[in-house]
Length: 411
Image 1: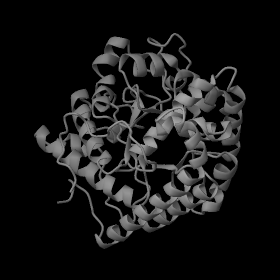
Image 2: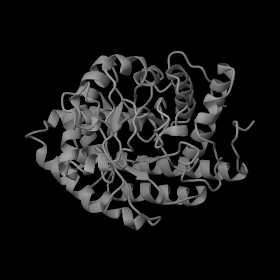
Image 3: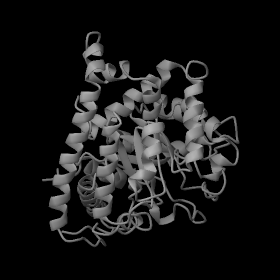
């Protein structure tokens, strides 16, 4: 049965792609583990935790690289070589690199092979695959309507089932083309009609509906080992400005935030969402620095998300390379350092390469001074645990399945 409003491709291609995805991932993972075997063995003399063993044997370059998920502007893997050989990144984000499943599978395979050939751990490869207008890989993939369509389904039980089906199909298809992380779902509560950047990307204007549908989608997607990324914490749905063009200032107090914007993120945490993306947003009634984006703010990342909400998974920034909410007020290097100081784990940038180089260099220079080595190690551990959750590395990792699942497990 097709998800509501979706168009599915022929099935034959998916069996072949799935077989290829498994073989490439296993090969890349095996090569990386062999490359790290000597350091892991040394580390195991001190600890039985495979994550700690890997971290103990990593160079500073490789540790810092794991904290970056970077993009490049080409369908040719050659354009990504500076990210792999020079910056030694832990993740790649695809934007408009390719538009069909076969090309995507070829590119992700080539990326993993290049990573293995450069003694890198397997890459987290992410794409922004929400549905609607935000689904860059369409050819040979099920084409989905925007999330808003699910929120309009009645009764709620039927909407939850549709969200489960959507997550199931997306998870299966993304895994088959070598994608290990989806920058979805959008957990923003669209409660400002003047907000056009979120709009129908949201599930609903009702926080409870967003929470229920977002959690169901996360569960079903992650059943396939594709890591979900709930966004844009602490909530972009009330803004008037577009954070791609300026820093939105949202004049809600903490009581409003608790009752509205944070409700879907709390539910996502209960659903064991693997990652949460922090948006570039200003809440001047909450953060004492009214001009500081939430992506660079310890108030939102360390105090609220980590401490109060108890979130232990990956925290990822929205794009640091091109979005003017950050670039208008910060250099690439300072933004990267401030984000890590605030509690972020993964710095995401779609380019340009010059900015990406500046970010990596600034973080390396800050380690041991404004960023402690222990702070870097903590984020590297979370990245490696996420790679274990995605099946890219062997070892035990926090579970992806929630304690109270609502979706029927994929067959």
